[in-house]
Length: 296
Image (cartoon, rainbow, N blue to C red; front, top):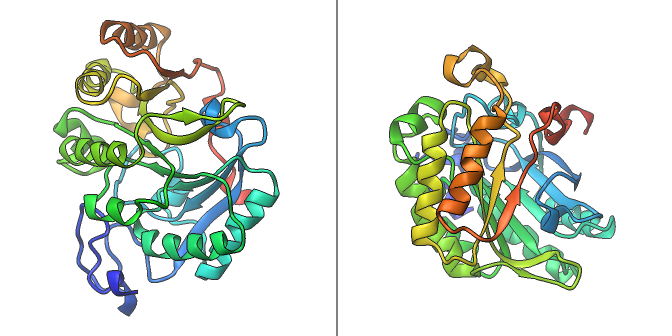
């Protein structure tokens, strides 16, 4: 694929030739690599519904989040290489199993492959919405390649503060890049639209994972959304944080959220007049949200 000759599919812009076996920050090669393709029941209610979301976890990432709950896939590169035709077959299999949608998790490095696979699958009758599930750290040019292919964008907006983004995820321009990317996603798909069963058909949902000891970060993220995106947008506030991977040895994030911290964030939702979205409940077993990659 010509896009891999000088890869600039993400904001890191490594410009390496993946077709010649060169490896950049995300560690992706020339072939698609996935860690899991199956029904997932712990997305937002309008995505998972009762039948589940047909979720494909791609291997690799351009961020180095030290608390990543999927670190086996993003940082340790668990997965298997497959052909584009096989990826299309996975999409069709998931639809046949009753998936509400095809949910592409961290797929930026394989966007050219995904587009070809979707073309194949649609010719074979694929007829469910496509979700692009993203860290938010995305290239505008790559997102434009996806226009007309993606029905639902599900990006994170992790950080407001650049120093926090650098310390926890290894990039120093996260907020600028992610906010521009989210505006492009919104331009493409707009506010959420739902079917008669309450499942999302099209639109943008912005996720934010609340981190312990960083409630001011959450406040500023929510304030930006309220000032810069249409009030009809949906926000998903996630309380599922637990210390994993390198976070267990990092002082300010080596514990779960407290109820008091989470209530403060809920208060900001009211303060900024954000009307639509979801809260996760704080639970004893946040680990349940993490797929069992070793079982596939």
